[in-house]
Image (cartoon, rainbow, N blue to C red; front, top):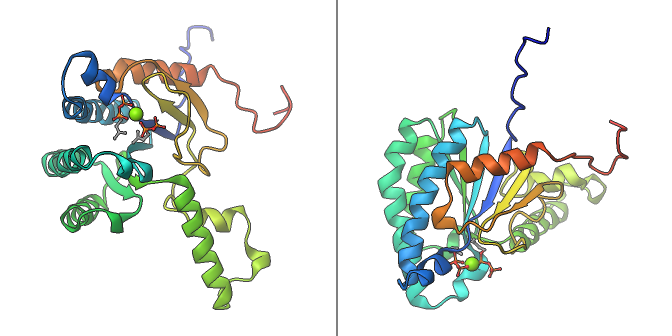
Length: 244
Ligand code: IPE
Ligand code: IPE
Ligand code: MG
């Protein structure tokens, strides 16, 4: 019996990452912030591949927050340019790997040509059965929750939904992530220890892993380390120790 190797624990179904530290990575090298963002896009490529190799079902990456619109116009333009480039350059490869791509966030704030690129990427990969890659762009957790509340209120006013029917499951179905499992593991790079308005509802019971690695340096080994941390945690969901 002892000779039977212990199977590795199953990977978390949904890993979410706050990709932070591009600006500091560039500053440390005396480079403009855009250089950090460019290297950050390469880290996205590595991480997506590693996540698929580890058998993660859902990977959600925070690329641009609702609040990031407050940054100087030059940096916002650089980031949007990089986003266009990333989608154009990567989509065929992602599709070939069976990755299903979707975007969550306030689409109407993005430039029309970016929305078109996103629509095409989602349509092209919509039937794929591999890694579910979600990019959060112009995304804010509070805005998402407010939009869900608005939709629910409208449904109630129109008589399609009775207020008594509104429970957690109904609410969750009105979020961008309606058909996704909650986040199991939430990683933030660059040493900051805050959520910054990411997946507020969906990370209610996520295990949090903070790493000092700056996002442009993040790769397979960092993801593996975060998964090890995750497997060492005891998820109790409010139950008492040992009661499950
Ligand atoms: C993360 O890196 C990328 C975005 C938020 C768009 P930052 O640009 O926030 O880098 P730091 O935090 O200034 O180092
Ligand atoms: C969070 O990082 C948003 C993204 C990673 C896209 P920020 O760098 O914008 O967050 P704060 O300002 O440090 O909280
Ligand atoms: Mg930052």
